[in-house]
Image (tube, rainbow over all chains, first blue to last red; front, side):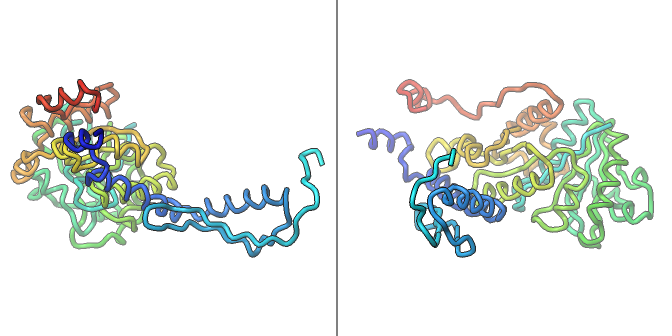
Amino acid sequence: MLDFINRIFGRESSSSRNVAKERLRLVLVHDRAGVSPELLESLKADLINVISNYMEIDEDGLDVSLDSSENQVALVANIPVKKMKRKFETESA
Amino acid sequence: MGEVIVITSGKGGVGKTTTSANLGAGLASAGSRVCLIDADIGLRNLDVVMGLENRIVYDLVDVTSGNCSFRKALIKDKRFDKLFLMPAAQTKDKTAVNPAQMEVLCNEIKDDFDYVLIDCPAGIEQGFRNAIAGADQAIVVTTPEVSAVRDADRIIGLLEKEDLREPKLIVNRMRHQMVKHGDMMSIDDIIEILAIDLLGVVPEDELVVVSTNRGEMVVLNNNSKSGQAYRNIVRRIRGEDVPMMSLEDSGLFGKLRRIIGLK
């Protein structure tokens, strides 16, 4: 019903206005990441820091990238693990 | 000392030159001393949009290469007290000027004016870098189309990299009827995507074409919607707090929609 009302008032989600907005949103995720490769580098460094609390990883084999499929963009990280830590080290340790 | 404002967009054809001419004329008729610089070397157009094409003697490249002083190259627009144009060279290309030269020139010129407006060429290459080199502030012009908004986003990123923080946005050629029918992105959509401050919205208006045909500026036409929009932007640049003009024609449908809360 709401859909019907929306259609009457030109607000259905498949309107070209919304399609344009959604497509732009997606393309800009990529454009903006492309403008600053330093962003991915800095994210990589932060990831290493966090994950190192839990396991030993191969930092050189670490791969982080943005992957887009039809209607979403995903952050894909491939992180080779060398060794699990036996115990979770708390901050004080 | 004046402010140097670059008017840029990335994409061509969104109305940088028209915007430059109208803001320049508007600021001058409001009493500011204004110098317009056409930085589109090889494709000069600000002169013909302003109706000053027959008065060019010297150009930007003559000045930056030291052939003449900047005062000698400036064309005075006789319709105003204080409006001047520095035309681009037509027979050279954008490599005839470098960013360092533009910075020196802007610093020299801004002592004599309240506002120096630079009409930036389309693209992100040297012409763009020349145009922004001496700027203190930037205005980004876009239209409600995916291509123009995407390019605007790229330009905003590049401006911020060059320390031109907080550029302001002008959305040009807005068609409210189409937005209403879900066939065009709204101002809110564009602002949400680009996340920058809105300086103004200029509606699509045939009178812009008519004025440009004659070498006149629509900002001086009191009976045009686009002229009103440009005058509002001028007042905002001059520091006044002017509310955004409503482009909405309040028909029965608009009212109905507001009543049931869809607006």
